[in-house]
Each structure stands twice: as C-alpha cells, then as structure tokens.
Image (cartoon, rainbow, N blue to C red; front, side, top):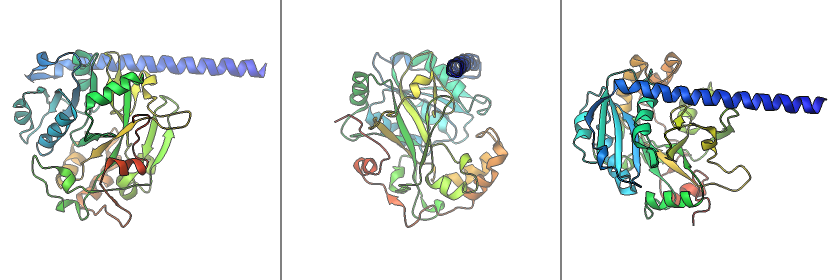
Length: 348
C-alpha cells in the first residue's frame, strides 16, 4: 500500500498547494480593487489606447533623472502607452509625466510598502486597462532589451511569441556600473545612462527552481558579490517576467519575479534547449543612489524586514567601486547571448 498511499498524499499536497495559490491570487486582486481609492487621477489619456497597443505599467517616485531616456527607449521599441502611478515625488516627476502625451498618470501619497511595494496600484491599472494587451511592467531604472532589439520592434517580438503560444517572456536584470566610484557616473536628465554605466558581471549567477510557484530564481551580480557575501540568500532576485499578454485575472506575486496563475512562470525550457529571454539593463547605480540609499534607510519602504538591509544601504552610501578586473564591458546583444545571459530561443 506504500505506493498508492504516497501517490494519494502527493495528490493531496498538490491540490492543497493549488488551492493556496488560487486563494492568494484572489486576495491580491481584491487588494488591488481596494487600492483604487488611494489613486488620484492626474492625466487619464487611456481613451487613446487602441486594440493591439503595447502598454507599459509602472509605479515611480523621484525618477525625473531617468524618465526622459526611459520613455524614449521604450517608445522606440514600440510601447504605445504608459500607465504610471507616481508616489509622493518631490523632484518634478509628476509634472514631467503629466506633460507627456502618451502617459496616463495617477498619483498617491499612500505607503508603497503597504501597497505590496506598489503592486496593488499597478495591478488595479492592469485590471482596468491591460486585459487583452501585451503589457510591460517595469521600474524606471530598467531598460528592456531582447534579441534583435535594435532592428525588430516589440510588435514583431510579441507577434512571434503569440505564434509560438508563449504568453510571456522572461528577462534577467543585469546590474550595470561605472569603472570608478558610483559618484563619478554623472548623467543628466535625458542622457543615455549606458554611456556611464558600461560594465557588468558576466558570471557568478546561481539558478534555482522555486517549488511553490515553479519560477526560476536567479541570484548574483555585483550586489551579491559586494554587499551580501555573508548571506547570499538575501541578495536581490534578478529574474523577472516583465512582458505578458495580460488577462485581468493575472497578478504578480513579488515584484515581477513570479506570477499567478503559476503556469505563467514557465518562461524557461524544462526539457533541454533554450527559451527566448531578454535582459533588463539595470541603471540603479547612478550617483543619485548614494543620497537615495540614505533616504530609503530612513523611510523603510523597500523591504519587508527593512532593518536587515541597513548594512547594504550603508555600503552604497560609502560610494564603492563595483568594477573589478573581471568586469565585462557592455557591447552587443550577441555578446550577451554568447555569455548565456539572454537567448533567442527559436527566434531566427
């Protein structure tokens, strides 16, 4: 009876896990529904969204430095409309975004942390506007690239994904950094940050499949190398699923690292070979991160157990040099693919 009993227990465990994940997804959707009361309309241009438009969703705070280039980069890729929540900015971010003709903007001074780090707000906008569209969900310090990105638009990519029956595409965050101290990577609003953030770690990445939701967890890069050597488990998670053909029943679980229903996390090849993936060029390490780290240490809005990351904030505030003799210069996407950091999959 051992075999049948084990099979029954396994089936019960699987059914229990599936029920728990459905309950969590419904709870996240309910939280998003309730969070609508925290959002104030600044400029709602969503009436201009047409069938087949590619949308970008995000929440931002004090990103006036990065946003001009961020918007330009993703417009050139093929994003048709940006739906953004601005969270209590003090640097002109709200006025900057309100003036952009392809941006719909909401504002809130509510707690970012209590809104599931902004996910409740963004999920509500996705429920209202994302259904039936290919949607990017990004942070302001992330620039999406993918195979052939300089010659093939997002509509070409999403069309191919749809033909392959793929509802989503993964992208790993690639931390970029300058050659010297962080304070030397000076960049003005509208400048391409990649001209000063030119280096990255080509190796030291670890991969693990999460049993609960089936997503692939990636750790590593310069932050793991420099700031979390004593406890690598706390190092930032680098895998994301930023591009999804959206359904109003979907929800992200933790940032854009994993999704519900869990089948959406099957963005990597399980039986050998490779599945298409991109990269999120992470421009976090501009000089302003020094002051922001000191501020976020006090605000305690970015981590569940914020006090555990005080040493990380202190280390960034000290203006470190992340570059080493093993650092790799950022060149072409083909070099990034050759290093195993992104893949064409079957897209020829």
